[in-house]
Length: 157
View 1 (tube, rainbow, N blue to C red):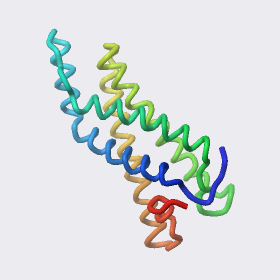
View 2 (view 1 turned 90 degrees about the vertical axis):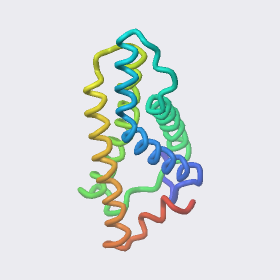
View 3 (view 1 turned 30 degrees about the vertical axis):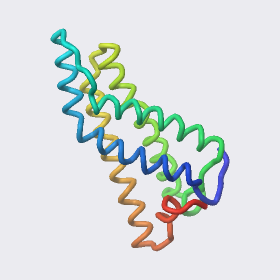
View 4 (view 1 turned 30 degrees about the horizontal axis):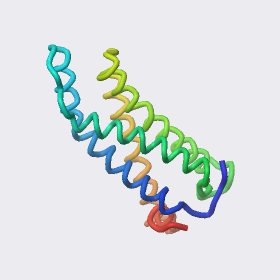
């Protein structure tokens, strides 16, 4: 993957859009469970915001990955090879993995009828915890270390 000095406007917009959608999907998870129960009883679920949002997240994350692979991303702040840089790199990999795995788990449950709803819910909670840790580290960098890290995701560079 290429390394750049900043994120593009497209990368920034996709980052914040996906972040908002993940939070909304997490808060609407009960709607997905109710829709699944309706389908299991032989009914039709109709439009389910949780499922629509999950599909949108998956599509946007695929776009994010394509853009990231094509344009690259700035290197993690810190000494290359340090524990902090490795934690940042692996944290981002985990977030991307979960942003793909969670919607695929929902698709497997709702559309394919596989019994992975509990795993989907657990993975969604893990994703939220990892994302909260990610946000806390960004705020720590910005306001404690004062290294300007957060500005990279606010202004195209």
